[in-house]
Length: 377
Image (cartoon, rainbow, N blue to C red; front, side, top):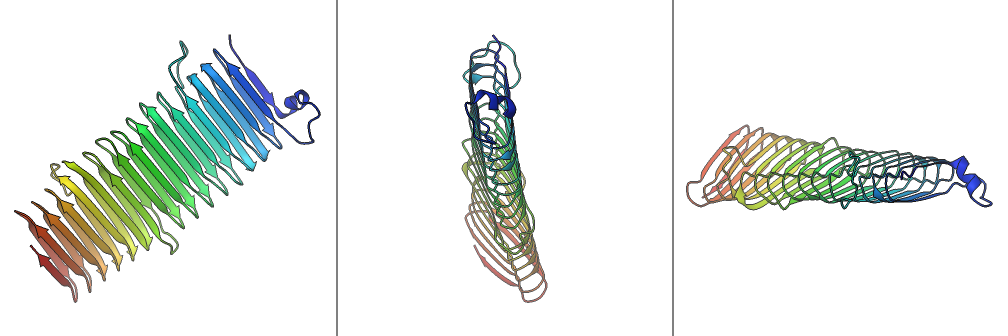
């Protein structure tokens, strides 16, 4: 049996008893087999669709109203495509899969939400199988929450271009991937990944850039930040990685920016790279573990003025700090068989190295006027 329902605001008006002028409402319940639903609403809008069993699929198009759409899909291959434009916007998609389908392939969970103009909000929750969620928000409110659990290949993409951007992505599973791109004013991004081989990328260009990536529970995690000019306000990038072979890349341009990387595990192969250009920027790297990669565990490159680099390492680690400009400060604190290289060019720069252990090596090179060096081994 194949269930198919195609609804539009005009058809619904005939099915509702004495509807209020301009009101559109839609409720769809489907149980079993092929499933399918298409909903198009122009006006007041509101739509609820529930599908249980087998192949599933929902398409919702809402425009020029107080928009609201709730989609729940359970035990099917699922798929939901929501497009909302104008006024209130709000979309909630919940997808769960427990292997019921006995034929027809493809989807295995997939949700796409496109919202434009006014109060945007989108929440997607996916459990099981392949998973994939894409959210595109433009204009005004923005806000997106994506929760993905127990999937074999989590994938989330969020693009926000508006005023009050806010994105939260939580992934539990193997090979989690999250990409967030934000342009606008109040940008905030939180990504939490729990599982091996996680990959997270955040690109922000706007006013109040704030981003946090936390990766735990496995090896081979990768975190990448690219943050543009911040119009004079504070920009924060934070990375926390627990596990073997964690890689972190942070790039910041502008002023008053802060980058913090914490890689914690009694393992090997942790890599951190921070590049900052501008003024009044701070980079802090904390690493524990051993280095078997043959490359620097921590690399910080700063150009501009009044920048500070702090590196704290415990293990067989390497640190390279390069600063060009004026009034920079570099502090490296290492224990055990570590190596530190600091290169500063410009005037009134300061370098401090503290090493405790066996076989430590420290090299400091300063060119310019009134540089200071403080070493303690």
